[in-house]
Length: 118
Image 1 (cartoon, rainbow, N blue to C red):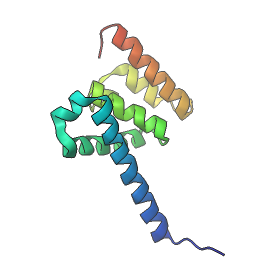
Image 2 (cartoon, one colour; image 1 turned 60 degrees about the vertical axis):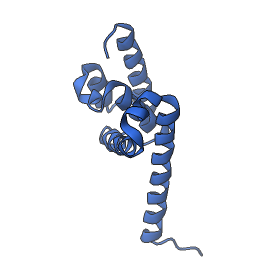
Image 3 (tube, helix red, strand yellow; image 1 turned 60 degrees about the horizontal axis):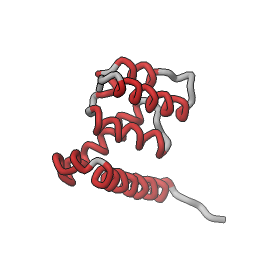
Image 4 (cartoon, helix red, strand yellow; image 1 turned 45 degrees about the vertical axis):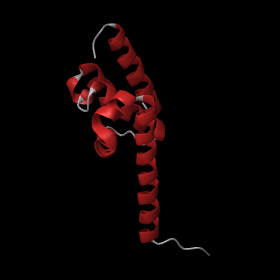
């Protein structure tokens, strides 16, 4: 029988989180180059980490949910979830599951962008 100790599980989770952070930084570099150029590698990584922590507060735990939150944090600003009523309302909805909230968040962001609100 295979036994996995807590320290091994913690090491695995840390490694996975590190990989995810680097993938998110690469995404910003490739898809949002103006933000990456303005911040540089280290500050982009720090911004990704902060967005990941914020996403967790709102119960976003999947790669999709966290990635959407990170992207919106770069495009709308790191405080978008508290600054924009529409984002705050969507993220506060704990009745809807995560996928529905992420879908609603994207739809609300697009709708507000069309209205010229960012």
